[in-house]
Image 1 (cartoon, one colour):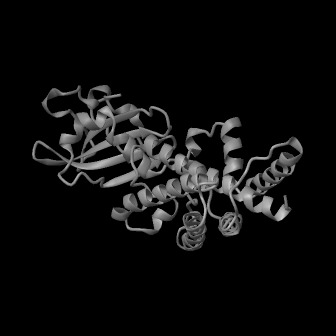
Image 2 (image 1 turned 180 degrees about the vertical axis):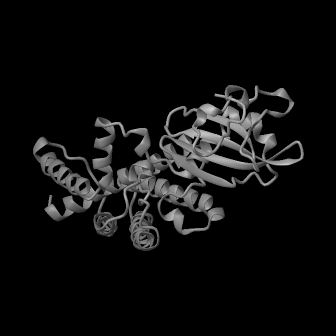
Image 3 (image 1 turned 135 degrees about the vertical axis):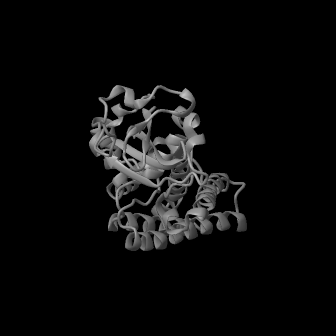
Length: 306
């Protein structure tokens, strides 16, 4: 078998694996944060109300093209359907390259989102080169005949060596590999842990604290302030207490697995801790000396509900 044919054939399983792997990583991210509204790679270029639809279209295209590459790689895939799938794959990576260039210029602080949480490193020239090379690999796979498995070890060895070489190049161009190795061998201190505000809001809104006190939140249910202190992120909502303005403040511990969530009701004018209406929980102020105030400098120990 000619080397050029082997090179073109290898691109098909490689591209299918990357497409399906990227789709699976995005799905894991969605299941973990229980939301697809958070900005993830190129979706950050779109208005918030469109990000859900864009994320669904991106993942759907990756899944459909990945499965299509597999189904059309054998003898049943010939002619126009096969070339349509491979041209569609090339177009997807070409559009992704252009989107990453734009994303790098307007949002240099976020990653490409190609593999969910693993793609949080800001976009670099290596990321752009990887996407462009994958577009070229997809174009090179057009008009490749049906892929057949090697029948002997001698015939399989060049294919395996070529595939290993391409995976090595891909690893060099992928910051996700380094980040994965770091995650395996190192646990980031919570003070340095990167958790987006969108993830914090998703965690908060599926917590028992939110279900217990959401009736106290103003009608629009939009936070009035969000800030972070070391291992905690605070989310404040406008509220009312006995005909005066109050703030319902939640504190969410910044960890990925079962984070702690606590809450406190604070007088907006004085900063004093208020008892929960109707006696649904004991008053946070009961833990503190008379006149003690709750402010941003106080930790979540000031709250009563854990």
